[in-house]
Image 1 (cartoon, one colour):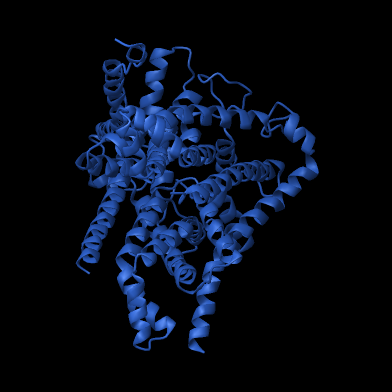
Image 2: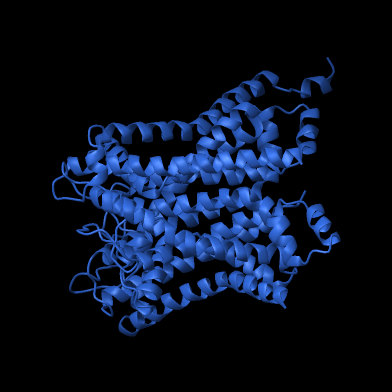
Length: 294
Length: 288
């Protein structure tokens, strides 16, 4: 053997061994999340066993866990989301259309874009403080459904804008040019060509954004969503509560039984969220197939 | 004419985002200025006690910052290695069919509300911690930090994976041609090339951890303390805001104003982290 050959030691055995071992570690990390999800779901469902029934869905909160229910919270969540949707969807889509179709590349536009990304990263409790200052106190809306819904609307607005932008960007330019060639104006092109084909993508983003709003607790704490509601909210100016606030209140009590009804309420909340996610994924899949056909 | 009108309407919708940002800054600054009329900035930054709800009241934010830092540190120690390893697996090792199953599950994990993670921390993780360390408090930073880390794994994993996926295959193939194993390609070629994206994902995760509210409000306690013992009850900035706003601090009182002062610090910290994070993502996204 020459000296050169002795120097070259590939250590192939050892390197392959380390390779295999670390592949195992990496795979374990990837499946860690999956495992946690199952443990979490199993844990919450088993905690809630025996508490989740029709009476629970249709009753008011109570000092006695066996009589307590989530009816006002469920209704409050639906009302808040309706207001959130009415506020954030039109503004969000309009902003996305402007940024994608109308705005020329300029310092101002890239500032607006960066600003939207930064808004998406503002902690949700800070949005709650904004809502408290602007809606509850300055506009004198009080601790009302309207104040809560608008606060949530502001919170999800950046998410709606960004996802609508992505959907609009996915529409091929050739479609727009075809419309212009037929003599369509800019707005006609947007209205009759871009928006219809971007709609499924926009809807997916909107549903995901709203499902985030349904799960948010922190922004409604400064607004003062109450946990003891004796009457159902009848107008946008009435006080209200939502599911996550109710869950927070019950979880923070030391008694076992309240923890159990908190778990039951979490099961209801997760059911709503997962079905919304499921619908969003269905829309996305259908849409992707259509783009392929074109 | 109509075209012009529509364009103006759309432009004003886009400018709403700027108005919201200005609104946040002004609503925070108004009451914060009122707070600093009664408390000096020096006391706020250097005093080591935070007791606005008791007499004598002390207004040093350090204990709250310390609590936040402790929980964030634990969360990142969980989320960074696990998220990174999971991203490596999904981007470099996993077959396509497996990735199609694991990624949606991680998405679901990311979509679970933080209040649910808070419940999980308090009723599942805390009892486990207390059976291992009997001296641990019912409310402790460790439980909140671990669960927050779990919550952040999908975020770190998907952002890092995006960065790894954008490393061109020719780099990998060149390394394989030199006889490198898969691990060597991942660690010596892909990781360095994706560093900026990975760093950005860590920064954004830290920012999320600092601003996270419900997990710490439920599981970390409400005793502001200058400690780095993870088994003790602490209080974070966000948990303090929740504690005061759930009570009946009257408008205009010093407790009420202290919420705004703490929220301003929180906002400044997360905003600067987010700006750095998004700038890194934007700047290095399309290098290849």
